[in-house]
Length: 48
Image 1 (cartoon, rainbow, N blue to C red):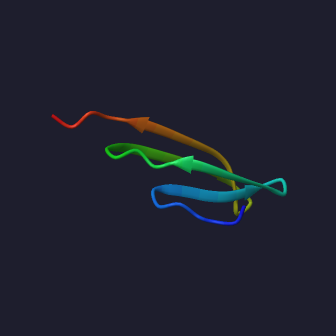
Image 2: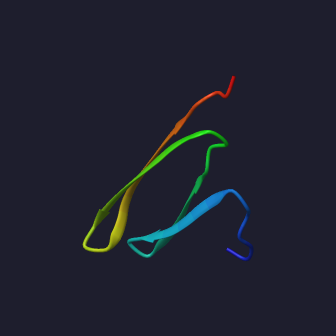
């Protein structure tokens, strides 16, 4: 991975770099175990 993009979260899990797009409006839930991100959930909402 040569470049990081705006609007994304990057983390390493089991030696693999993973990324998740941050929604414009919504929620992000991180599950962490022993200081390591194990799961990322996003819920996007529409702004009216």
